[in-house]
Image (cartoon, rainbow, N blue to C red; front, top):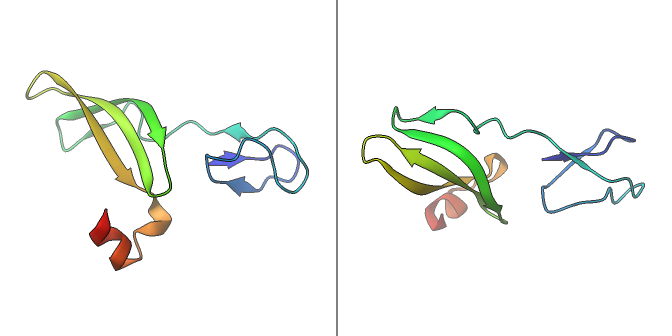
Length: 86
């Protein structure tokens, strides 16, 4: 999520400027970067963000290889149809 420094509202990462006041949005640090998922995937960086989720570059230590991990946006996890399509 991106945050407006003037109005403090949050907007999806696709926004670069606040639609309310035009201020440049500041991107919060991603909480998954630096974490290890399922005891084997070390999340390194964001590759991209789309309408349904975020794709991360990660190191899979059990197989010694780089992998991509796609994580569904939290607000979409409540919709069973979106989860099924994901």
